[in-house]
Length: 257
Length: 317
Ligand SMILES: Cc1cc2nc3c(=O)[nH]c(=O)nc-3n(C[C@H](O)[C@H](O)[C@H](O)COP(=O)(O)OP(=O)(O)OC[C@H]3O[C@@H](n4cnc5c(N)ncnc54)[C@H](O)[C@@H]3O)c2cc1C
Picture (cartoon, rainbow over the protein chains, first blue to last red):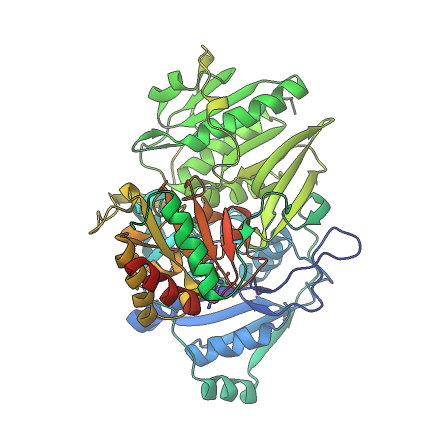
C-alpha cells in the first residue's frame, strides 16, 4: 500500500493580517506560515495506517513558504519520503484549481493507492483540494473524514455529518480522502529528529510546469470584518475584568448573590 | 446558460435542513434580479418536495437514500450540465465540502467557498466570503458568470425561504448509477453523552488556547462554581480532552444558552455556526483581532490563565 499525503502551508491565524496595497490580497511579507492543521491530521491518519499495515507514506508539497520545515517534520514523524514539486508557485495566492491541476498531473505518473489531504485550508477560497483532485483523476473521493482503515484494494471510511453522525463507506482504491480529524491526536516530532532530517536534507525536488488552470474568480477587495458591531472590550486588570463579567451575569440573574 | 438559480436541497434525519431554506431565500433575490427562476434540486428524497414552497420549480432525482459523494455528484453534475443555471447554491455542510469542488471541476464552473453574502451585479454575482478562519473578508466576482457558491450556514434568514407556494415538481431521469466505486455500509448516530449542553442556561466554553489537557480543570472549576457545564471547540474534543458530546459548532451541537462564556476560542466560522444566537456572549482571547470578537457582546484580551482563577473566586463567593 502506497499513501501520498499532500501538505500545504497557510499563514498562522493568530497573527495580525494586513491587506496589500492593491487591496485585493493579504500582505504575506511579515506572516509566519504553518502546516494547514487539517493536513497535519491527514498526515497523522496516514501514519496510523502505516503503523497498522506497514504502508509507505510519502509527503508531497508545492513550493509554499517555509514548506521545508513541514516536510522535515513529517520525515521525523515517520514519513518515508518527502517530495517538493517546484515551479508551480507564483508570487501570491495559488488557487486550489491550480494546485489540483499540478497534483493531478504529477499523480497520474505515480501509483498511489490512497491520497490524503486536509478537508479544507484557511485560504481555499475557490474550493477544497480533495474533491477537486478526485474529480480530475476520476477516482472516488470522500471528505470530512474521521477514520480510514485500508486493506488490499479497498478502504473503510468514516465520514462525519452535522451533529456528529457518522457514515461508514467502502471505497475501492485508488481514492482521495479529505481528512477532518485523525483517529488520534497528531504525534509530535522530537526536535533532534527534525534536525537530523534537515541535516540529511532528503527532500526530493521535482520540477513541474506552471499550472494553466485558474480559479476563474476576480477578487475585488479584501478587508478585515467591519468593526461596527464588534464586542465591547472590557479593560483593566484581570480583577477588574472578572468583576465586570460577574456583574453582567448577576444582572441577568445567572449568578446568585 | 439561463438566468435560473439552483438550490441544492439537503435533508437530514430530521427533514430538510435550515440551510436549505436560507439558500432558497438568498436565491429568490438573485433570480428576481436576473429574471430567472429558483429551482430547488432534491436528490433521493422526493417526499419532501412539498415543503419547498418558495421555489418556482422543484426537480426531484432518484438516487439511493443513503448519501455517497459519488452517486450524488453524478446526479447533480447531470442536472447542472443539462439545465445550465447561472448560479448553483450549496451549503458548506459535509455534502458541500464533499461535492462543491468536485462539481466545480466536473462542470467547469468557478466556485466560491465560505460565502456569507450574495449580491447581483448586472449579470454577475458578487459573493462575499469569509477566509483565514474568519479574519478576512473577500469580495469576489465570478467572471464567467456561471458559478457555484458554497454558503456558510446561518448567513441568510431561513424564514425568507419558508414561503408557502405550489411550485411545479419535475421528476428528472436519474443517470445510470452503475460502476460506482463507493458503497454505503452503515450510519451511526452520535453518542448521547453525560450532559446535555443544549439545555443549559450558561455554558463555559474552552478552546485550544487552554494549551493542554491538565488545564481543563481551571475551566471546570469556574463552571462548577456557576453550576454550568463545560462546552468545547472541536480541537478539544478531537484530542479527547472532553467528550464529543460537549462540542459546539458545525459538526457538534447547536446551543442557545442565556450566556456563553468563551476562553481561548478563536471564533472560526465552524464554531460560530453553533452558538452565535446565544443571548449573551463573552469572549476571552489574547488576540485582539480574533474573529470571536465579531460576534461576542463583550470581550477581553486578558490571559485566560489570569482571568479564570479570579472568576472562580468571585463565582464561589
Ligand atoms: C467540516 C468542519 C467542521 C468543523 N466543525 C467544528 C465544530 O463543530 N466546532 C468547532 O469548534 N470547530 C469546528 N471545526 C474546526 C474549526 O475550523 C477550527 O479549527 C476550530 O474551531 C478552532 O478551535 P479553537 O478556536 O479552539 O482553536 P484556535 O483557532 O487555535 O484558537 C485558539 C485561540 O486561543 C487564543 N489564546 C491562546 N492562548 C490564550 C490565552 N492564554 N488566553 C486567552 N486566549 C488565548 C488564541 O489567540 C486563539 O485565538 C470544523 C472544521 C471543519 C473543516
